[in-house]
Amino acid sequence: MREDRRQGGGTGGSERDMEDVVGKRVLVERRSTDRIAPPLGAYSHAARVSPEGVVLHIAGQVGNAPDGTVAPDACGQTVQALRNIAAVVEDAGGTPAEGLVSLFTMVASREALPGVRRGIGEVFAEWFPEGDYPINSLCVVAGLAREDLLVEIASVAVVPG
Image (cartoon, rainbow, N blue to C red; front, side, top):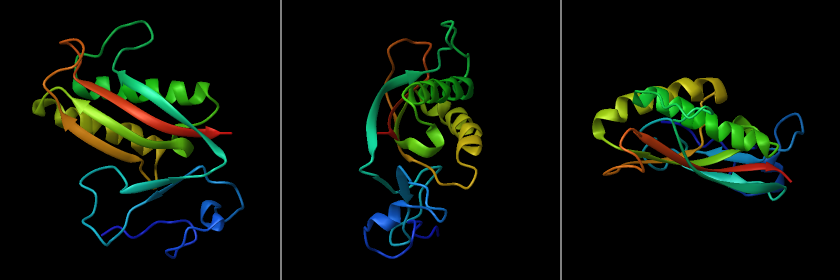
């Protein structure tokens, strides 16, 4: 099982917990605990946000590239949706690796799930190489805004205040 990964360990909620070993402020502290079942995928059980950060709520992003084209498969759409989220976070002065708190992933069919998981895995390997993943709730929905869309990802991030 994954262990509780709080900075500084212990069960307290001190300000020291939000600072890493070199003294750099941590905007988001992602946590998983062995007191419940381990996550079923690439996500953490919880996240704590530093009071020094500004919360950024990001509308659901789909797999459309800046030119409006949409990837034909779930993996490509997932990668593009996550790249779109990164662009919004970066435009606000942050990075997904440091500031992504949570995702809400909606998938248009069960058949698309393997591609979505593959896309998340590809991007998360780049953003979170040590497995310190944001929260992610995933659900299968009856459909999205257009028939060609297979995935939509809403998110919350924290950027420097």
